[in-house]
Length: 425
Image 1: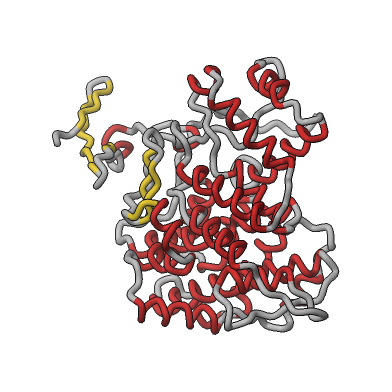
Image 2: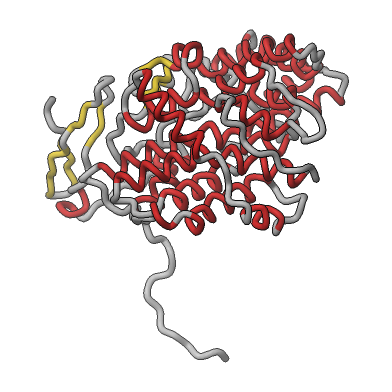
């Protein structure tokens, strides 16, 4: 493929054309500033690829998401979350023996240091769980200084396994602390999702057996959230990692980035919207009309996506999972009825069809979390648990790329030109 040519005034530069494995085409502008003095202005980096990646592929127009070549539909139906984590971290699906070894390593690291309880208890009970989780994740670096070197593959492996193992325990403990309940310890006889449900919902006074349908639904949710390219939080992880920060600090940055309502907090806002509709006697049509009114600040949460201009493939899977969980738990949730009516109405309305505003991954996930008994402000924390292997895969890929440079975007300065200092008068 021929290079592109940029002409500016009396200068000309060839821009190499880079073609991806799925026929994506980009221009390599790494020599642009050096050869022309120009650099690009690209707000939100919507037209900029910082790197070449093999982690996940997204075709927003076609509604496709693949992790290292595997369609998300197949992984959600057949794989366990730890299988997908292994795939993202190491590039291929594990053999039976490799998976068993990986699962054993994660299981052996699920316990937290007892003195970490004091860390949780230093926060107010009403503190948002995302802030607690980010702080606790960063603090792990102080508990495990033996494996912080980002250039040591064995240390990185150990840190990745520790994070996969300990983040569910930290989430369960912060939940228990905020609920004024006793902390529950991991059970090595349970799989990843079932063990997490045990630590969150069991109490010492009576036996608790995780429902397999609920555990399976949680497994699917974690897989669907595992990676999504270089989004806001993944970029934050890579940005911090580009400065050679350790994995714990980098993932903590990703958690902070995810906490914003424009990123991971959207599923919480979907549920808030559905509850508002329910309080208004479930009149979906009036909210549809408000969403179409340019002068009304109301927005339909859970519809549309910056990348997908087709149906979000994750939303199709989560919709079925929500139906299965509510049926199994025999929960008659009016919010699910409202969500289904809202989806059907929007998908048949020319306004939404023309603008390609389809339900996204956040639309149904909050309903499942609500059915499981999680408070609304825990929804984004559960998103973070699922996204953990993707963040680590992105960070690992960055560290293994010999072309990696510390992130240092340019800015077009538009402030005052030179002026002389004047003493205060």
